[in-house]
Length: 157
Image: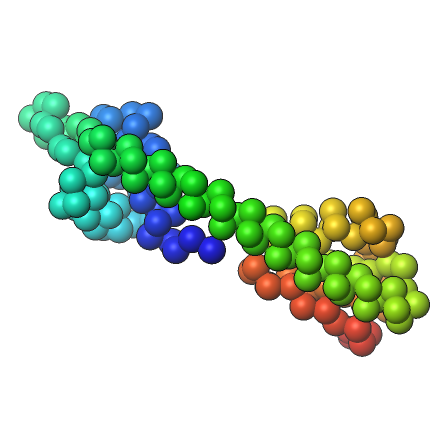
């Protein structure tokens, strides 16, 4: 998947494009990171020529995305979409393989342990293949850990 730095930079560029007068504190809150992290990223983007800074008022700054910054935002957005679809396809393929294994063992239902987008992909793939998703601990489980999906065939306690 995309690195956290690329994801943060994409989000920063999008937020700055939407509101050039946004301050670092607000950006930090929106990204769920420390102000120092936002400052580091902004300095990096400025040093590389993707963002310019102008003083709007005595203590207020205005961030302006340069044409190079717009191109970077577009590239990061395309990379994000491509990596997301790659994760989606790989997860679906892995779950289809697990479904074959589960069906070969005589099961027509399973449980999903975990939450998030990858768990949702698992759930949709199961439903698409006629596998019921249940809470019964006596059936096999798909364990979702981040972007990984593991099959647990033995009964969990």
